[in-house]
Figure (cartoon, rainbow, N blue to C red):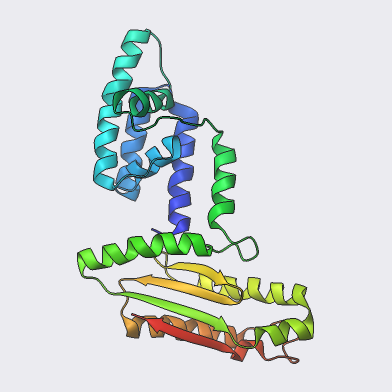
Length: 246
């Protein structure tokens, strides 16, 4: 799952939590609607957002069904409406004892931390940590469903010379522009990350080597047609190397 889609699901969950966290019927309906819209990923996303615990789709769905029952029980015995996050916390702490020392944090603060953890500050692409985490998931999924998976490493040749010639601020602007070109050239299911320095990694699910080559060539052509600051001093747009790992 791409970062954009994950953030979209999380934003939807945040809105539902904000409006219906004390209304079990409405909250349950909204979660089911989100699952119909986005698929099974809604359930692990819900539990990760509220409890910071990672589960598979099936396990998360099972926990959610039990949490609903526990939410009912708490509301009945407390004789008042209970926030769903209280039910989730109590379920994981006292019912199945999955959490031993939880930390309470505002969602906005948590989201900021998440962004700083998985987003490259300069290009606003995924960072190396996010890429490695998702690479493992995509390899497992490709193996399970016998689906092709292509990894493309894109590197700007002689970027140090461009930096030395034009200055690091100009170099940063070039990297930001290149990142936008790459992102616009990919599908929603693809994952792109700044791999380090002037290198970018593209993870292309359900794509064989020829398909990966077509996507990479699309990026190369778009970079070649675009313009970069002071490129006459260093021909940045024609200096891209590609490595394919099918």
